[in-house]
Length: 248
Image (cartoon, rainbow, N blue to C red; front, side, top):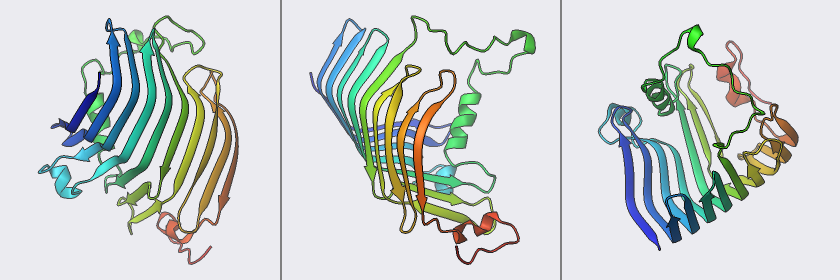
């Protein structure tokens, strides 16, 4: 069975946000068995948008057509969901763009509204000290634990991060252009290590990270080699009150 969707949009009026927007979605060899097992040979999403301002809203008037995350194309291969396990053979993300705007009140546009909405959901009310449950044991596993695994993740883009800070005077901002990220052996199983190779930067700066990292079990395990080259300091001047960095 094949599945195709065009022009999908999920809006939240209280947040004045388009939570998810998809220009086109296509899934091949889709199978659902007894509502417990799902398999998918391939999945492709074009024009993915997350946390965008709704047209005509006050948020859109302040930041017209702003979207926190956009992805030109997302492609997954061999998805299987069964017996509390989710396994994906490969995931490729092309031309992602993360646009962060820190408003004058110090909150991130789009993200702060989502956090506030989630905090206001029923069941999230503060509890008294006598009602607080003990913290979960990180070593304790239950039959209901969902295990996720991804064999290989590839992400590449040419203009992937933009940050504008309107909470300081004068306003500041920076951009990161090229990104090339490859991760192998992604899993939620504690104690398992995944290999990481990351390269990103802008016209002058370059950051390279290689090594391995594992999820907390109960502590984070990481062995990474990080190289930072040609960091331009003058753009940081607005954060140093009373000082101006002319070069460095």
